[in-house]
Image 1: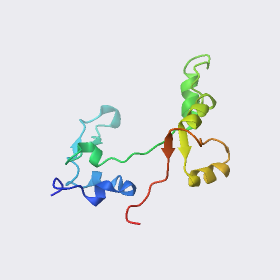
Image 2: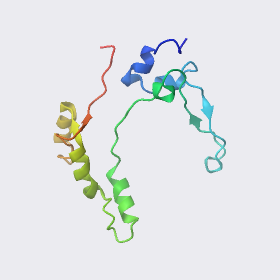
Image 3: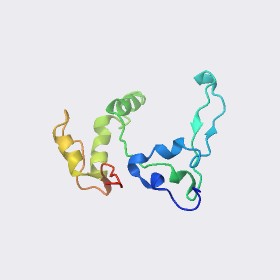
Length: 131
């Protein structure tokens, strides 16, 4: 059974979404009908087995879109909230060290120089445990 030992499927970073779709790994809970979603019930994945939901979740690092930060900043009225994309970029750069592939992508990006190279957070592309 899925409780005896961890499945290879639940340990593959590149398969992070797969266990959520199998009854053997996910309890399959649904939220109550949401009026703002025209009564739709949203899935609420919850993992079975040792580690619970952490057994079916992957770890993904996403910064967010510049427009989101600029919109939040504009919500402060005078725009002085310090949450604009240009305001938070130095903090993202200080916090991360990206892998070589990401640096090559950053160099060819329309806005180069957006990735950090000596921060404590190691940002890498997922690896496939199958080779």
